[in-house]
Image (cartoon, rainbow over all chains, first blue to last red; front, side, top):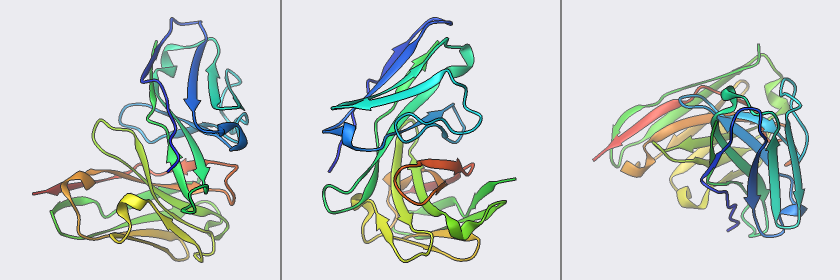
Length: 109
Length: 118
C-alpha cells in the first residue's frame, strides 16, 4: 500500500517560514491535500490539489508538489499556527482505492 | 450553515457492535461523497471508509475489511462497526468530499468517541 512520510516535528520562531514535507513514491503525479489539526479539534483543510487554498485560509499557506516530495509552506508563522499538519492523497495504485494520510508533523512556534 | 454532526459513539465491550451516524445540513448532501476518518488517542489520522455521492461505490481500509459497512440516505451517512477491538478506540469523524480526488475533505464533523474495553 502507498505510504506518505512526514517528519514528526518542525519548530520555528514567530515571523519565520515553516516548511512541511510529505514524501511518497512519485507523489508528484498525485493530488496532495493538507490539513491542520489543533488539540481537541477536528482537522481543517488548508490546502488542496497541491496548491489551492480553500476559502478563508490565509495566503500565508501555500503548497507545491513535484517528484517524490510535496511541501506545505507557512510564511510569517504566528503562534496560532501551532498544530499538527497532515498530508493526504488518494491512492488507487494497488487496485484497492483508498485515502492515505501521512503520519503528521507537529509545528511548535 | 454547512454542518456535519456525528452521533452514536460510546463505550462498548470487545466483540460488540456500534452504529455511528453523521447528519448533514446546510448543503446539497446528494452532491458529495462522504468519508469516515478516525484518530486513536495520541495518534494520527486514519481513513477508514468512503461512499460515493450516489452510494454506488464504497471503499474501506484494508485493516477493517469485513468489520465495517458504510451506507447513506438522504441526509445521513452511517458506519456499522462489528467485532470491535480495543484498538478501535478512537474519535471517529465524518468528512465531506467533493466528487473526485482533487478536492480533499473540506467539511468535518466534531467527532464522536468510541471506547472499546476488554
